[in-house]
View: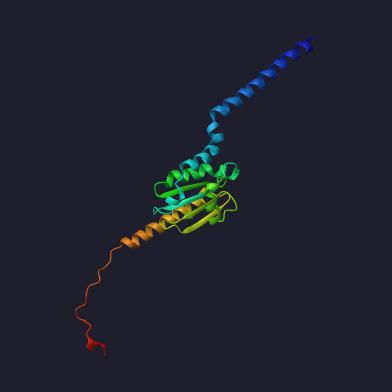
Amino acid sequence: MQSGSREPISNHNSNAILVLIIAIVIISLILFRNLFFQSTYLLKSFGELSVDPEIAFKNNKATFLEFYAEWCEVCKEMAPKVSDLKETYEKDINFVFLNVDNQKWEKYIRKFDVNGIPQVNLFDRKGNLKSTFIGKQMELTIKESIDQLEREVESQEEILNAPFSEIKENKNNGVTPRSHG
């Protein structure tokens, strides 16, 4: 008799534990939904927040161009890192995001030989391609390339704005028809 009365208690405990586990999972999903779904949301927002490529290549700023797809797992994995880079550099660099599933960008997909995603191309402010990254990359690798772009811009600006001496007319060595002889 006693063994029969213990089964409903242990069965009741098992049900209570199961309900508790399910509740914890549901609450975790609700509380951490941004963490679980952030990458997908970021990828969708990239296209909406993107600078138009025609403008990016003409506005005298360096350009970060990423080809991506919303279904791409590596793109999703890199999205938070790319978002951090965008927040850090967006005032100095154009960020262009082109979804390879959108026929509108076919011209750029062919022009830059996109055959794997994500593909990140970095351009200097004159629109010259400086770096291409295909597939999963470390944030530091891309950051170093972006910093290199900025150093090139700074060094070009230093050269263009460096003090210089004016060329003055040298009156002592005047050229006359007789001096060629």
